[in-house]
Image (cartoon, rainbow over all chains, first blue to last red; front, side, top):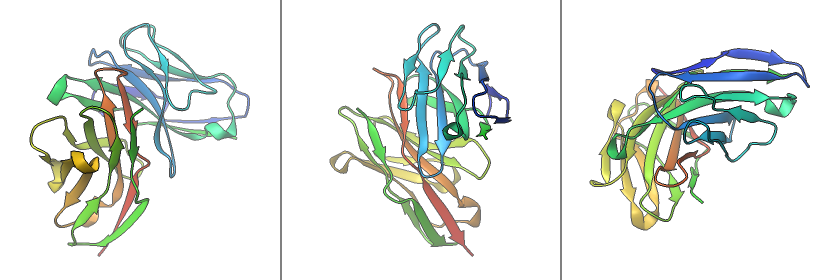
Length: 114
Length: 114
């Protein structure tokens, strides 16, 4: 989707390996989110960042760390991947104020942990 | 805390039939409500949103939703479903004035028969 770029699109990890999912936005907005999507569970919030330099835990933060070093980028790190982290990960931003508020999503990262 | 419930995991309709997807929310103040659609293997696309004003909201692709405060509901409707509407639909609630989170329901998968 316009303005939100996620990398990589696909990844296979072995249990115990680490990796970082990258998210970058060119829309100059404050709020960024990381979600995971699992069948029957919808999208669950992992971490979010209301502004540069701040991060907060969402619904399912265990096993993840995040970093918001600048306004543009918000990365999600798996220090020691587990099969339970097999999922599709989405980065999102929030744009606008009031009636113009809208969330934009990246295309997703499909992660498989074996 | 805010929450969203989509009671129907899977719905099947015939092409041309009417559709209603249910969404109930839990939130203390006036909520910001969204409906998103996700086609297989794709990201999320915004269908419509509600913040205030007219409780019947028109969206893209012929969808509409009605906000009913007394029932804490924001159901999505379409008068005549097309085969291309087969997808997964997510309702979401947000509080941008406080915690700045976007919370999703578990989704409803729509199947359309010819």
